[in-house]
Length: 107
Image (cartoon, rainbow, N blue to C red; front, side, top):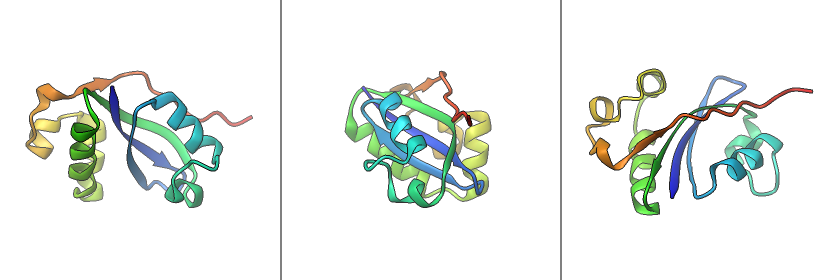
């Protein structure tokens, strides 16, 4: 399984990426480990907004690319409506929304 995900950063920007292990990847972003993305190293990840699960890396990468082409307003709409078909015009049956949201907790 692969996941395409969207993270909200502290500056309200949105980061989009893919992962084969979503929980591990979120931990890397939130803890700013050596393996976190350069973007989330500079723009602190705050919250997993949404994620989609798919069968393989190629489909996850295709969705990641399509999301990265969206405007900020379109990304916000995608986060709130989760409507890949309407917003991106892609084959939605290949993607399943991942409902378990993880948020960074401040101690």
